[in-house]
Image (tube, rainbow, N blue to C red; front, side, top):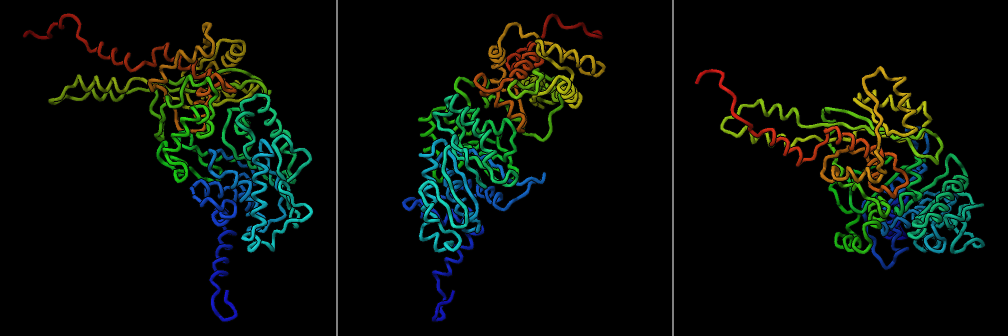
Length: 542
């Protein structure tokens, strides 16, 4: 970097540093290239940019997971306005072509409408590639072909290309990277016909659009618009995607590490995702305009169908300790649907533990009061430690009768349950008979419960108040969140099998007298403490 006069060329030296940083980091490339794409808007950095870039870089680097498979399926759910389209559809392909010297890569970029997102981002990437800034640094690697250089579709001289299309127009095209950005619009997600068309295309057409079925990449980045949108299908069918889920307001109960081990760095519940661009006043303003349904999906990445919410998510109490408390009683609740056909319902099982402050109460009553009020202490202990129940395990699967019976028995044995309850219906009868025949010698019993003419919605409403009073606990695990989410969207959600097990278990424990509301418990304790009748006769003459 020394000119003919022997002096350091500062400008060239700085450019070399910039090139080195860009070739090392996608996030650095975004910072340096931003002025080309958005010359009137200064770059505002958020930690989420680094978070997403780390995962895209892992794809570029060909990282292998512990199971030996390439890291090449990624789903990102993040609110609008966080530069998600620019990161995925503009900066990442430009970075792989130039700074990472991979101009041979071919990109198929799809959105819900080609004339909207796809066309806009195609023009932006083309402008970046052709810019003086980019060509001065990587022009020796990336040159666009003059005869195939359109605003929407362009090819470089190394054979790489970028094609913009819509999610429903993918036939005849193949690529190394299929990038899907907001495959639904708000309107199409709300239309069952349009949404199902887009989902069907994703499931049936996308896998056939890859140059290499083993190595080629699919990345989906979107805001949630419906429980049964493409994100919902990916998660429901467990299609092997890594999942980045970054809500506008931090929700620790739903925060999960990615397959690469990265975690949302926020610690306080409600902490904002991108306060540098969306401070609290702006978020609150937008939430008032959008309404709770749109906020749940687009901001919180937790779509709750309109009309749902019998059991609100926030009514579940989060159990944050490493181990469960000692349980007085353990029961399982089973909803049966033994079939493996994907269009049919799941069989679902939840396991519940009843716990109380029995030990604390016993200790309190054994203490000798020295100047204190033992009665008040015992009363306080009883009222604070009235019985509660906790969800301790759950699963849902499509299983044939024999496999269903085996799985239920294995769960019952593992958790050492006291009782299994099954709804008294045709499928339930068959499962109960098989369980009694094969496992009747074990320590847990099987009981059929009659819903007594109540429909599913009525059964859930019957136990709603117990959730509202904070008597129901759940741990911070993904399987527990699956149960909580299904209850939150009922009766408008796609599945309700776990919901049935929840209402049946809670109602059964309530009828057995093992789940008591706080006011009832306090009244019962104080009633037991009341003195009744004449005092007993003294044992000795006084």
